[in-house]
Image (cartoon, rainbow, N blue to C red; front, side, top):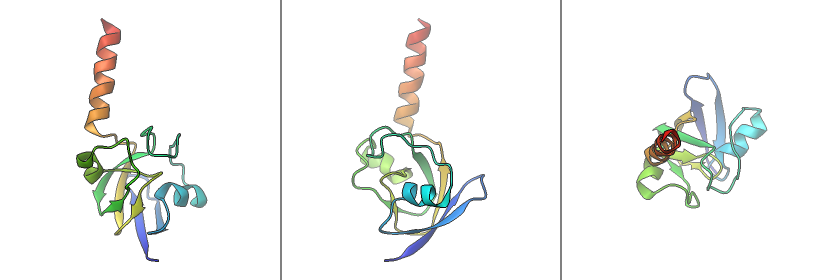
Length: 107
């Protein structure tokens, strides 16, 4: 078991997370407010942009392979290196869908 440092952009929060543990679980245990909902890699509420580092997240079904290279679902992601994450950032496909839905509602 290896532990890595996970730093969150703009918050000054840093935690140590084992490569066997999800980032979300470590946040909850450390008292860090990390948004989440389903905890099974589907809703994207816990999404974070990977600024630096790598994660393993084979069960992150809501992300495409390409998105999984740049975004982590903290409920599924386990660190594979030290990380810098920007929480509350969503993959472009989700941002595009939200924009399309808002435009349709305005019509």
